[in-house]
Image (cartoon, rainbow, N blue to C red; front, side):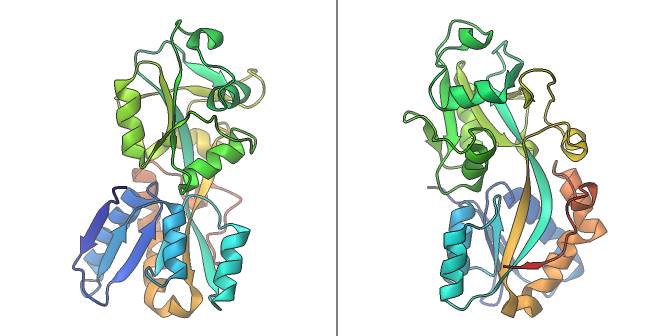
Length: 277
């Protein structure tokens, strides 16, 4: 599996940030801006998925784990067994967009239709108002926090279909959906581009639909929204605290918005403070 890598002035003492591919472009930009005012600092940012980042935190091969889902109970237990006290920080919110090929005439789907499609119960686009064409379902791989969140929020914690095509990164889903007329997949809002078409989603049985956008995510009208996290060892607060504080600062949150994410101060449910696990 290809892992994206971003290095600024990397040395043996560099801050290491690893994990969620959803958070990767945002953290890259935050690192660039942070180092502009901290020229003596070093930062190494790598992707690979939420599970990879949390495992790296456990193994002490990263200082900050990027996560697009909350840490699991089993992961908490592993951290505790190593006497590692982790801090949790919400750095942004993300709307998860369901995307299809731009040639697909389907513009909207209910949560129930999405569940049926991703579980293999609906297999032809004609059954949801589209053309007589086989549905080709793309998903992230199981180590991805995006995979876990979509399963929880959209599939109601039911299993994906056995024939789902797992992709190692968001870019691979975009490319596959772009090249396959019958394709459907899901990506973070920040990754939306002209090569894929987002569909409106309804969580009330089709009474109302909303398109994914920063404003719709912030006001609650778009239903598929999740927090994005940084996790780190509280014993390394002195090393990573300045970067985390920068991410939550006005300048850092301006980058969050510019990248297509929802700033924490646009969500009443977020305080932006660390929470001991």
